[in-house]
Image (cartoon, rainbow, N blue to C red):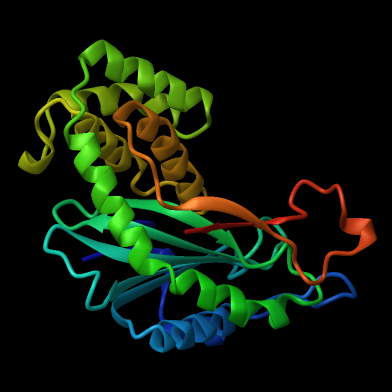
Length: 272
């Protein structure tokens, strides 16, 4: 089962990650090797008593951007219809911070949706390496809570019926929120009306949710967490789902006076 649906030429092995070339560091920019991020994440997973069933890695932009997916297994996160996936992002071209994302993948269709996005550093600044183990351990330690919360969300969506016009209106709202490409609205409406998978039929919010994630496949992986979490923030209100996962602000240890006021100065950590 594929964890990362992207151009096959972008997929790499762990060995290839280790051989990727880092750009030069400066006083304010500390590039983070993709392989080091993966190694530290694996250590956090093992310490949490979880195991990795499957993993996939991709690199783009001459190896400067990375996205990885890890299907996890544990005593309290085992299901036949979905699996929990931990995603990693890293960019050594300064395009976005390193981040860990926790989400779910539906087994029948491989649709992937994230419900948390934890920035591991505000850009790649001087104390990123000191902060990484703590932030990774904190994120991985919340996997079970995310698993349970998504189960409750799915049930709420399945019980919320919506009409064709309502589905179309919601898709337009998601386009306005930059959570869904305008060019794919018609395809999503058609998928809502005639789902390709029997499990998603019924004209519910769950039907529409999966028509959206179906049409997000193969898109920009770095944008997928924001898009699926934005969809959930809108749909949760309609379905009356109250997430147990709430956002809190963590101040990074390397925040200096010159950094205050920048748009990505705080770390937004999604926790319980």
